[in-house]
Amino acid sequence: MTIRILPTATINRIAAGEVVERPASVVKELVENAIDAGAARIDVIMDDGGRGLIAVTDDGRGMTPEDLELAVMRHATSKLADDDDLLNITDLGFRGEALPSIASVCRMVLISRAAGAEDAWALTLEGGDSRGLAPAALAGGTRIEVRDLFYATPARLKFLKTPRTETDYAADAVRRLAMAYPAIGFSLTTDGRAVLRFDAVPPALLDSPAEARLARLGAVMKRGFADNALTIEAERQGVRLTGHAGLPTLNRGNASAQYLFVNRRPVRDKLIFGAVRAAYADFLARGRHPMVALFIDLAADMVDVNVHPTKAEVRFRDAGTVRGLIVSALKHALAEAGHRASTTVSETALGALRPHGGTQPLLGSGGGYRGGALPPGLAEAAMAYAAPLAAPSGRVETAPDNAGAEAYPLGAARGQLHATYIIAQTTDGIVIVDQHAAHERLVYERMKKDLESSGVARQGMLIPEVVELDEPAVDRLAARFDELCELGLAMERFGPGAVVVREVPALLGDCDIQGLVRDLADDLAEFDHTLALKERLEEVCSTMACHGSVRAGRILNVAEMDALLREMEATPHSGQCNHGRPTYVELKLADIEKLFGRR
Image (cartoon, helix red, strand yellow):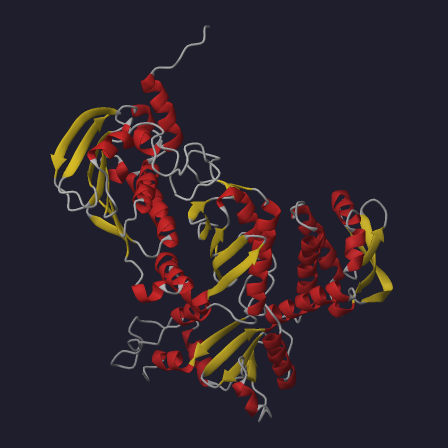
């Protein structure tokens, strides 16, 4: 077969396939062009999930008739300072492929009025072919209408999802750009229904970039993100990291609430996602993901955005510096949060409480049960209710000498419920503490501190414990014997299917050795071997702390409960256990009074 040059129509379709994957790709490219044009307001309209119509209107600089004709030519752009300088890209667009690629697979109309011009002009294209310029009406800026997307390539239509799903993809693209540009107002309307509307952040807030960004993030991410976000700000070797990260107790079941930006460009980068996962490894259970919005700013020549036509991937010159900066900045912010937990925990608890609205009496007018015979167990239940409590599940010690402790953040212990939950009174509410989850975090932090300073203290076992396992599990443990010994757990092989434990960390006290070793073997099977040694050791620490903490069901006296509360206040990350669950719930007195109609 001889080599030949492809027809122009085929070349355009190949380019369109790289840039225009679905309607959301069109929305993203057109909105980015509007941002680069200096728009202060961008409105997007979609019909039938983008198949019927995509219209993007902005109030930017606009284009002259000559610019309109050039804009739809391949590789024509106004965004590169020098024709061959691809190492100094400061705009969102630069390839000059978006408009011609979109035009080649739809019917497009570009209407624009340049700043200061008296008239607006419209350029009509069909399948990439120009139908000429004509006068039009437009107050200013640019409006681009895309109709019958993929009409020229019907096979592509078969791969599109439902209109609702395609609209969701487009909405996500608009949200990401809205986060990076709080000074711009955005809206998305589909089939006459408003889907998104983000007004420009008030000018008074724009003087403080962090506050302006947080205001926009709160509008986009919701779920109390603005109230439960930690401010991130760090710099290293010319790389600046800013943004906000949610408290560990504000998490989700997927990573869809992780937004990452490089020089204000929304990206999806595995390196950055991995750094976020590593920073939160101590605080979240497997399968849970934090909510973050991180912005990386660095010199244009330190990052390559020309990796893929969609510009969603980037390549850093010094990837190690970027990853290290993200991990250290997030960990520092989480450490400074101390025992703080997200307010959504208490909001969820209050939402689960409902004031008793009263029920109709079960007894009829004659004194009998309205439904006929008494249901089985009803009489017994009524007698039990009227009888004195034989074994109360709550326990309050008389006159505890800790009245002044109410001024502490977690208050003064007042009792224990079900031998599991500590009830504390604060100056303006109550705190309910899960004693096992709280102590698990405290033990874990102690173990990490000992590991960093002088190593974990060990205690020998009077009678070594033999733990039977399958051979692969023994092999996994044997490969980590030295690391486990650093953590105070001394083991050795005991035949082909067992290990013998000779020393355990002193912090654990009397713990379930059999369960501990089996859990460690299971954890090691799931470890990411690309993690650093310290991160692997901390994962092991977490499992060991869980087995060595105060168990649910243990009765504590007031002094022990207060000691636990005070240590929580002094320990970083104590607002959540090692698995990301909250260790306490705080209920304000005002909220409790509302439940009883006192407010």
